[in-house]
Image 1: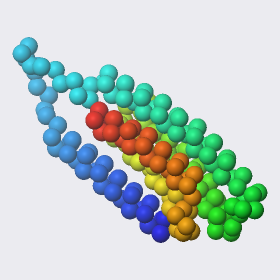
Image 2: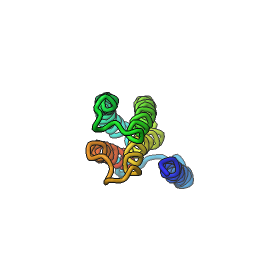
Image 3: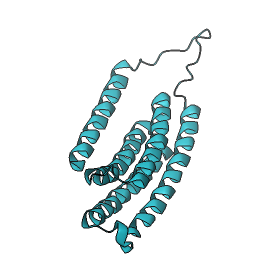
Image 4: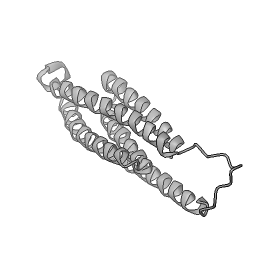
Length: 172
């Protein structure tokens, strides 16, 4: 079930990016001579894009640090007999895998931000959130309302990535 949610999320994100790219390609005006009376368009200027890129880069670096810390704490759980069911160990292993993918996506995000490719950064940030959601989904599938710590962490990541996505979309 987690795989299908992740696949669906990637399809939705891909469709959005394709739509946004096509929309921008079709609506791009031809280069015109600026008239002295024309007001400059400040939306999406290189300076604004750089500011957004720097802000999002800091957010992603914080997320990367927290993912690594949280993953390390999850890996310690199997040593505790109270949280050491076979299914929880399976989820911990899955989380380790998807958290690794999330860190890779953060690195891709940072590269995209360096080149001010905000559309690609948008896609990469979405992938970070999707990977963290996959970990939470595994624990939710176990029943009992999932794992409160994993849920809290997932909510925090969704908040940070949601803020980053909003800033990227506004600047793009």
